[in-house]
View (tube, protein in one colour):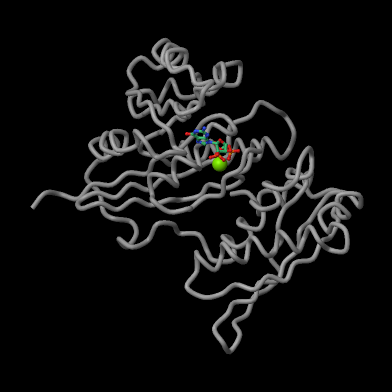
Length: 293
Ligand SMILES: Nc1nc2c(ncn2[C@@H]2O[C@H](COP(=O)(O)OP(=O)(O)OP(=O)(O)O)[C@@H](O)[C@H]2O)c(=O)[nH]1
Ligand SMILES: [Mg+2]
């Protein structure tokens, strides 16, 4: 019998390049939350693809962003650690955007990993997509890396990439049972889905001002899970926006999240959400380390 192969694959790239969308498309499940807001992902999210004889464990990371703010530094550390832990690297480039300084910095970071780096030129379905510009950028900086044109959103072009990653995986065990597609704890996934709804329905600084704090959970006799938590914001004015007129906004978040969570879990999820203000949460290094790993 053939030997089993496996690999940890770090998914890296600029914010909003489509890393989480691509990982979800490959794993066939919504493992990581997705939104048009840059820096949606704040943790390393594992997505697992098991095929006969091979398991790929994807490490979806926060987009690498040039900035010295404490939060951005923390997100960069999370991505750096995933890179260090990975056997292979999947570098996602948004073909609709001109590669600027940020893209240059990421390509520079990956130069020493070129042999184990696979490049996804993403969003080729979009009207603004410029595949040759992205390919030229890659060929000049990572000439030894294999490049794949794809659309993570439409799920087209991903098979060839998965095939190449599987071939590059070395002999190794299946780290997770075959039916697992992620290793996230239910309470973490619930908080993420709630955060996604906030990201999808707020603008400007609000998405980045929010985190979801877990308080407690319990099961009801009918088998439903009750999750209690806080939407933590930085300012009193943001609290008003997140609650909405007569509680309308938070109700919308709750209802949309509950609906989606009931598809993800085999039991209904009931959310009890409150809003609280913590003006310093983004400056608290200890808290950031605990929240973003
Ligand atoms: N047209 C098009 N849009 C895409 C594609 N892939 C992702 N997007 C969109 O791009 C936006 C960002 O996608 P994400 O998957 O959240 O990007 P990300 O790289 O994980 O972003 P961060 O977590 O913020 O670093 C979302 O609005 C997606 O719907 C694609 O193949 N085509
Ligand atoms: Mg993401």
